[in-house]
Length: 281
Image 1: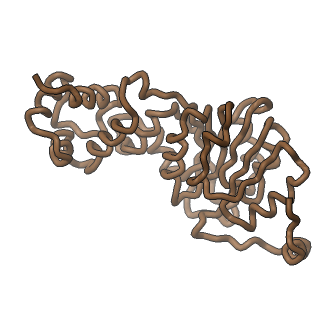
Image 2: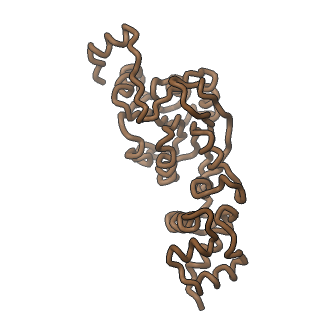
Image 3: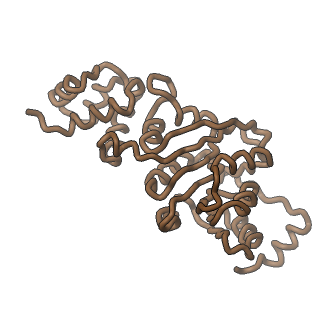
């Protein structure tokens, strides 16, 4: 493991403050009690490989390193990654990878095990990271993630509520969601403009029980949520579905064509999706 350059080492000794790159969403958690709560929310990790997304300055990393069987910390910022590699150079159970998490092959990193994932997600790519986790869902057991409070509310929303949407349905297709606790801006340095909520995802392939192909079903969800103010029938007609096929599918599933997607539970959406896959008689 290469050592830090003499220049960087000197800057650290002189109390050099890290440059905060706003475009990377770098708001570092500085609440030690919150860090501990996040790690404890993972449960027993003594026999588990843990993947940390965006460890930053390592507030959570140091707790994970002492508890996990193996820790893989993926940090996009090269300066921060180099610091962490230096800090854990003598720890064979900790691997620090300088990489964009969206390009990381989580299935390969997991190997024969299932990962426990933890991370303070950059707000501007939260959805992309979630979708990346779902793409590798078979390699993930659970995840404890910090996201913007409004995003957490959307993820955990119930059908029929204003917050229920495509992100909600997609997340709940792959995992059971619990909102754990919310932190104020003062828990971070620099403080963001929003509150942050810690959520826990227990990965559970619900699409298998629904009997749907996840990729095709998510495409269907995109169609019905394309314009939230429009009805199911209007959104599906706009996506290219034939009127006669729609009429037969709504009739077969006893779903009103006049409701909106936000009022449709996943189970009902799956029934409609499957009915539309059945050739008309």
